[in-house]
Image (cartoon, rainbow, N blue to C red):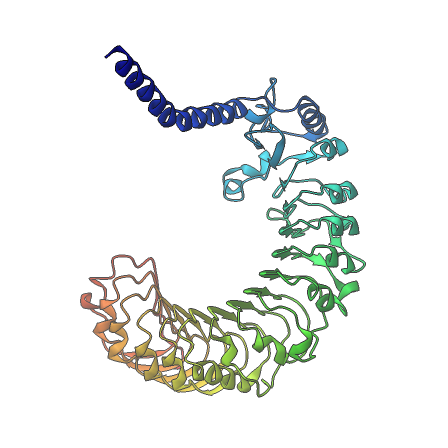
Amino acid sequence: MASWKTTLLLLTLFLLSLFLEPLLAEATIINSIDGGMNKGCIEVERKALLEFKNGLIDPSGRLSSWVGADCCKWKGVDCNNQTGHVVKVDLKSGGDFSRLGGGFSRLGGEISDSLLDLKHLNYLDLSFNDFQGIPIPNFLGSFERLRYLNLSHARFGGMIPPHLGNLSQLRYLDLHGGDYYNFSAPLVRVHNLNWLSGLSSLKYLDLGHVNLSKATTNWMQAVNMLPFLLELHLSHCELSHFPQYSNPFVNLTSVSVIDLSYNNFNTTLPGWLFNISTLMDLYLNDATIKGPILHVNLLSLHNLVTLDLSYNNIGSEGIELVNGLSACANSSLEELNLGYNQFGGQLPDSLGLFKNLKSLDLSYNNFVGPFPNSIQHLTNLERLDLSENSISGPIPTWIGNLLRMKRLVLSNNLMNGTIPKSIGQLRELIVLYLNWNAWEGVISEIHFSNLTKLTAFSLLLSPKN
């Protein structure tokens, strides 16, 4: 009997060991990870950060937490949980906070090359600070593990170092040269963009407000070397050349955002631009684009969400663009801005096919004829601006069916008749400008009783009335 009991006991202990062993192993792993989380940063990296801090000007004491032995607990510093190595330095100055005096919290001074001791750094953000025109340091091109680099709106000056082309692991690069607080920021510029070819992993590129005038003839070739690029931002770059070559030479097969606004191209839109099927947002406002719109196949733009061609000189041919986009049953388009373009003729019925449109701006053109009935089908519309045209006739009563409307601007047209009471159904309306038209009749409480969110209203009559 004793032998049987012993055997049973041993069997029970064996089964328990099978059950408990994985739990014990897991507990060991957790303890190991916890131990890593509590591990202080590497001493040489702590000293490197302190030396970096000593070179900075910190008027508001943003780096006051940078004391003590464990730099992993310092504000703006993140470490790898298991190794203790510094992997992230995020010292951007908050853009929104600047409106409340955050400009005083901006860092300045010099950027010490002691940062090179942060061998495992993969994230560096110094944006929205004030480095008062000093050049971007060459040594930033030596961080082999860097995946994220943001130096935007930080008042750097001089030449962008081509050494940044060594950052082959970089996914995100923002060198936007404008100053969020001061429009007279030092000018950042380049001799050429050949160094971009080394950034083979790049997905996001912003060189806004960087003077690219010396690279204007080859900027497209340089960007074309970035096969994984998703977003391209080159606004205010003094570009004057918009290459017209055909699509087989364009390698932007994944890009979803292109911003080339505020340049001086003085040319028509190239056909290859309309063949990027992944494109969602296209900004070419104030880029000196002119007509005619070439006969291009617009069916590839079926993913387009935002199209801004305002402040150009496209002329009446722009209606062909609207008709072409509507022909591809572009249900994704949400924002269409064609203001300030000298478009003429009647507003096309094809506008009614953009069923998901939220914002439509056709202001400062030469449109004539009545308010287009096709707009009544745009039930998602939140902003409509038809001001500064020659649209005539009354506001249709169906305007009250556009229940999501927040901003309705019909100023300075040739409209007349009575203002329909159905306008009072637009409960979400915030802005209503009807001034400089030839309205008749009486405005009553019915027009406004439901417009509880209205904050801006104008109804000055045209002097011709």
